Length: 63
Image (cartoon, rainbow, N blue to C red; front, top):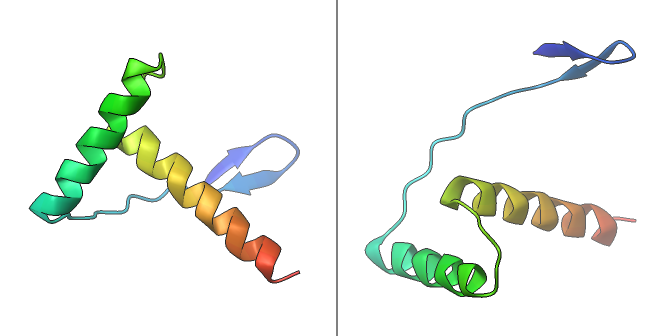
């Protein structure tokens, strides 16, 4: 846990994941398409943004 502004805490954790060859191919193709349209990303950044977006969708469904 790391202390941030206003006495808030931010939890940093490392999550290890593994992918099948097919999943890696899909991920690579997705990143290639994004880069063709001017978006530079890495697999880690892409997966983090996707995880956050999916979590927000789940939270919105619960409202």
